[in-house]
Length: 142
Image 1 (spheres, one colour):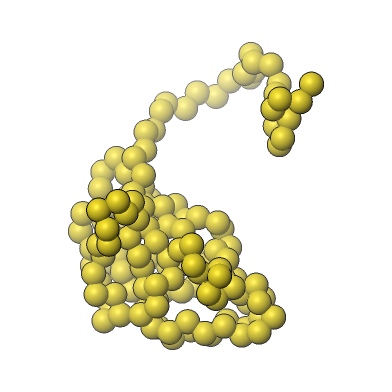
Image 2 (cartoon, rainbow, N blue to C red):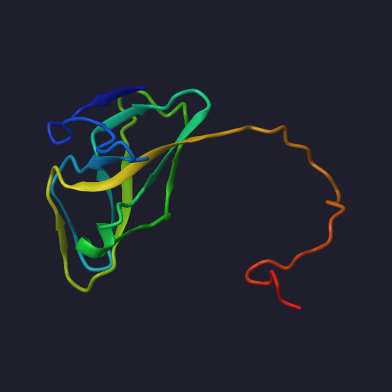
């Protein structure tokens, strides 16, 4: 996999332990969130996702605990062809606290994980020919 790092705040992209399945991204700039404000945090990093994979980005487990920030779209799906020289990875966060939050350049603000994908053929039909299940907590209810 190729990685282009366009900032001095992201030294490398590595799995930090043998058992790690994700790698960290760092903020490329100082950024302040007002209460309940959302912003994009720029990483200054471009990732060329290997063929047959997608890059999934998500918050680190400590992001909400330390900063009160939640990713506005829960996870990010980065397509394989988003890898131009200026296609940097960005994280969309909202400040859930009642006070301002500051992120310093170089702070770890999210993580990335490669997920193998399959692309089955899509067929449009008029009926699924299956029983309706209900969804949203109905499994196991009589």
